[in-house]
Amino acid sequence: MDQYLRKIIYKKLRFDNVEFTVLDVIFLIGIGISGLMMRLSLKSFVSGDFTFFLEPWINEFKANGFGALSGDFYNYNPPYMVILYFIAKSNINPLTGIKVVSCIFDLIISLVASLIVLDVTKNKLRTSFTYAALWILPTIVANGSMWGQCDAIYGAFLLLSIYLLLKERPTLAMVFLGIAVGFKMQAIFLLPAYIILWSKRKLKLVQFLWIPGIYFISLLPAIFAGKSLADTIGIYMGQAKEQTYLEMNWPGLYELIGIEPYYDYYGPAAIWFTLGILMCIMFYLSYKIYEVNKTHMIDVFLYIAMVTVYFLPYMHERYGYVAGILAIIVGLVNTKKLYIPIIHVIVSYGAYQSCLADRRVVPFWLYSFALLFLILDFGVYIFKYIHKNSLGNKEV
Image 1: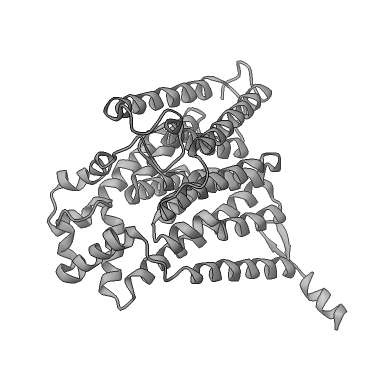
Image 2 (image 1 turned 30 degrees about the vertical axis):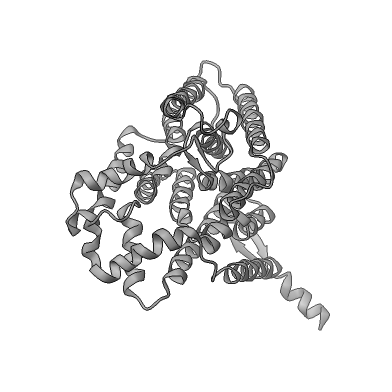
């Protein structure tokens, strides 16, 4: 019997030219059950965001139907509001419905991230650990299954976009980037990385037109319901005007100088300061002629994700969501950088804890220095990579 069972669990299966065993499948199923039970244990938690925003929005749909989209009671873009409309019209408990949607996209994130690592490394162990890490990652579980947030939706579409770029399908990649922007404005934070890859001939300029095109399509549900185009476009602008502190629970640069003093002056200046930093990064990476492989492409996405959220003002605790996912991918593609996701997850979950419990256990300036260390360290790593893989005067 023992020998028979051993033969079964070590039986080989092939996927994308990589051999897996039944034991690998058992491991993935076990992790799947663990992550599912984590989510089920949090299904009854009611956050302030659900009480004050999501539940009233759903009640508005129950009372006024699809036409409620013409109103001004919400500050999320129409695609997510359409999801809430269908939840409102179903017999599902609203809290459960919202969390189930997020859980579905949690799973998509885990699977797509695994495909990215498999494509780059062809290593089944790293691929399996990518799936495991992201499916049970505390920040991802807390974001959707505890908090009832929807960051997994735009995060999944961003990952799909990156995966398609690695597979050399740039048009479809930009379509998914446009969908991500349609769900949440923060998806645009990664745009500098796409511009850098355009300079390396991984994209064509015309393909960027998919972003405004898909974004306009995302506005149509509200427009069809009777909301004006100007008011619908103004949803994202309204979000930007709602901020009252230089930092909204994300431990960025401004935790080091204070989040309240000179708010009216520092805020706009900080936006332009961040744009200047990003332009320097884009100029340097575009100017240098070097070999751009898949690993470096993922590195660029992570670096831009970390830099943007660290230096921009008004950042919420959830805005490091995509950087956390990319950090896991980078750490498992290049295990010498495994400390990056470890530090990033600690910082991110500390920010979540501060918001959900309304109490800071660790001073945020320590978290801010930790993120600054990651940015400087990873920046040096990318700098060394460029010089090591320089092509001199050769054309890219």
